[in-house]
Length: 283
Image 1 (cartoon, rainbow, N blue to C red):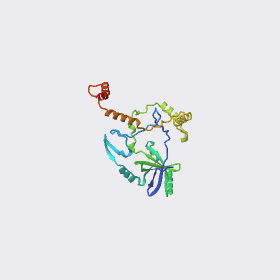
Image 2 (cartoon, helix red, strand yellow):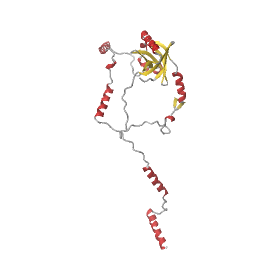
Image 3 (cartoon, rainbow, N blue to C red):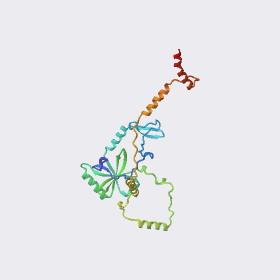
Image 4 (cartoon, rainbow, N blue to C red):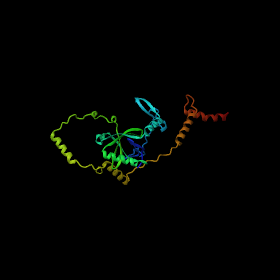
């Protein structure tokens, strides 16, 4: 399993060297966008909105827009130094709380934690202490240049770190429009609803639930593939300058042609040219 962060977790005087591993994976089916005409992949280029030129990575800087159209530019070195100052610190568990006190709306991403070299015993100690106390640890950690509030808990004999949102990142439920302020339901309606809930209540078994849309999409893709309903992108034609070169040469010839005398037609000019040798011969 890929290690995406190394550091240490501490509570009190106990220090645990650990590694983080992403606990979940995105299994969305990624579809490519093609040009309908030739079935070639569509390119998305970074273009300056004013200069209208394509930009290379070295032409791009990061900035914070503090008011409309005004920015504070932040250098990569400044951001890297700031990140290192915080990432290099040990992550300290600052509080222990009961899990049911944290509403699920706060949870963000999950990471498995494994002990790093020499951390096995301290890892086991924290795991056992959390299990016995039925508590979870709250800590702060910086991952990918962002400070995160995190919950450390036990999952199937493994320590798990769940990053959670800060309170100011969770929008206020009171701002949701159209929510009725009072429950205008009858006693009979409520009893019927509760009865239905009781009938549908069961033990949570995650294996029971599957992504039906993803399965159907995979089946559709496979049926088209085996049925040879496939398309192939066109080969990009080699660039040649022959046409442009001929056009440039012709344009150059046209520009260097002497202009016809004023008042003379092309026909008269041609007659005059044919007449010149004859006049010389008679002389």
